[in-house]
Length: 463
Image (cartoon, rainbow, N blue to C red):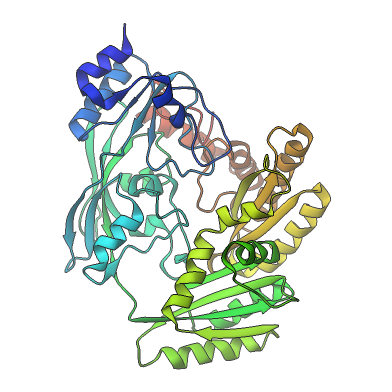
């Protein structure tokens, strides 16, 4: 059997086979290296994709689907000898229905491209991961991505109405639909969200959309201690103020933005709180002043209010680009950034962060902490050289402790990056700590029922 020749009969020039073409598909944005695939398929449409998947299923060939390659946990890294299926050509926005507030987009559409399109109708798609320039509709559904606007709008699962999926057998199925209400048996749409390509390949999705806020303003509040920021946010919510964006950044993060973007901060600052308020033009000033008065009760070093779009966009882009700007804080060129991603109830954030700071000192590693304070999402960005075995051992131990801290505070080991390769042991640890190992058994049973040959994205989420 000549796999590449057979695939070319199905997909012609859409099959890549040369080494220089295959090497880029061995990695994604995570530190993990995969095996060189036998081939990379870049199908034109769902029928072509279906034929490729059926061929692989009939011949027991491993498959890994790939969107923008922005996974931070190794979700799209190929393990074992198989093929990678790129959804790069599934890049069309198929339908926009403003009156029903939905858009139908193929899975390879990038989120920024989708929102550029929706801005013509004064609407937007709320999920807002930092990688929105490159991440795709299908990839963000597969990992249930969140982002900066999660404080007000939630995460991807809150905005998906339905989808088209190619199952491991090659069968094309439709889940969900275009209506907000639906009570028609098992909810397979929700099952696909967060499944990381292990039980099917999403080819298009029906997504809810929302009118853009009329006007937004921003408050930057600087603190010596994170407890002050956490209590300040709780104070806002207690008074009925729900921020559009609620972010926190530590001093290392702020210093990287100063170096890369020239954005300064008060000298004694250890944490900054960034709060965006969305409202009507008539009421925004009043709501911002109300929010500022609450924040002042928690003794910030400094407080700044602005509605200047240029200034706000500068800080917004700096926050979204924080992963890359943090590279300026590396001790050597061989260091990588390994991103921890956990979540706790927002009220537990100050206590959890205190424990995390103690864990950082205990394990003797260099870590920057920032995240979405509005929904309790903590990103621990760990600087380490993968070639340094002893340091990576300490990093792994810290990651495990980070996950335990999150679960002990009622949270989870993964907030928005998925499980992939990186968090398989952490996922087991979470279910063990919650005294619910049966949940993992159910996941495996679902995988076995839909993909009995275990060909789709083998080795991700669990073994």
